[in-house]
Length: 216
Image (cartoon, rainbow, N blue to C red; front, top):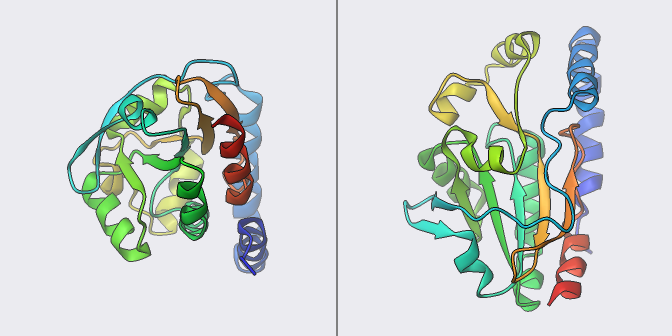
C-alpha cells in the first residue's frame, strides 16, 4: 500500500509539536496567519494562462515549460527548498507516483529558488527522477504571484534552527515562494491550482495523477 503524503506530514507535525517550544510554534502560526490575511502571494487561478519560463535543471540544462507541454500536460509544483522538511516529504511522495504520472502521458516539474548546486544535491540525495529546476531570485515564482518575504521574527527562528536559506538560494533576500501546485494542459491553461500560505498543507500526489487524466 502506498504511503500517503498527508499521513507523513501529520506524523512530522505531531513530532514537531512535541519538541518545539510553544512560543516558537505560536510565532510560526502567527506568520502563516499574517500571510494568509495579506494580499501577497495569492498565486494564479484556474483558467489563467500559465506564464512560460526557461530555467536550469540540476545539471545546468535549460528547460522551457511550453516545450515540455508539447510532450503532454504538466504538474508544476513550487517548493521552498531542500531545507524544508515538508518539501522533502512532498517531492519524495511525487517520486513514488512518478510512474503513474508518466503512464498518463504527463510529467512533473518542481521549481524552487535554490541554486542548481543545492537542487542537484537534493535530487541525488532523494533519488528524484523528475525535473528539478532552479529559479534564481524567485523570478518565475514572482510571475506566478507566489513570492513573499519572511518576517524578521521568522528569520531569527530559522537562523536558530541553523537553516542557511541565503546559502541555499545564493542571495540574502529571505524571499520564498508560497508552496503551490498547478496542473497545466497542453495549451498552457491552468486546469487546477492549489496555493496555500500554510506551507504545511500540500496536495496528495495521487490526486494530481487523477487530475492529469482529466486534461489529456
